[in-house]
Length: 209
Image (cartoon, rainbow, N blue to C red; front, side, top):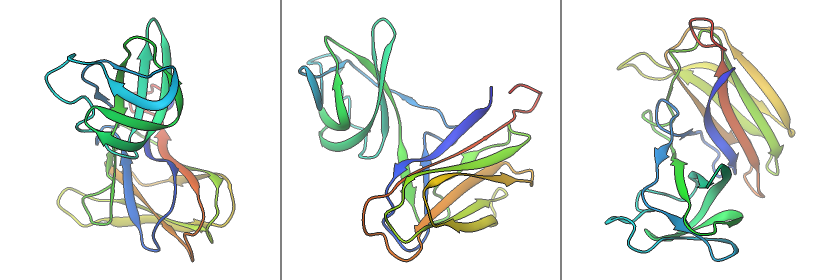
């Protein structure tokens, strides 16, 4: 099995300079949700189940995070957080039916422009490929910068380029690196709605795939 860690999921460009996003923590892992959640029928509005925990379930969740709801025994729904009304209520990008009480977990999406943003640990890989899945490109093209760094050093650009049309693209990384991030920017305009997903995948050290 090829392992992968995600940087962007259906991302919409909004800048002419590089931004660096990461889904999940540095190891690419999700966060466990606290307390049960529910909907009223099929709905994009998800609310907490009253008095399940002493904290607000969605307190740490932000717009753009990826969230998965688990309905017993084995049904799962993956969505993106569209809006956050409060720590007790969010809306997601498409309707979901959570009858009774569903458990959940989420992958935080954090993005910024400075050197601390966007890093995934990739030292467990012995071969790396960065994949770009561009479903919609309404702007004038997307530029990318694939970067690494040594501990305590400034980012170093490994690959830089651009794509001008939708499609799936693969960029191989020949260097052996321990950290990786991918910056995205609009080439000439970010008008319209784009849908760009980016992840890194590869063989794990020790021969497991």
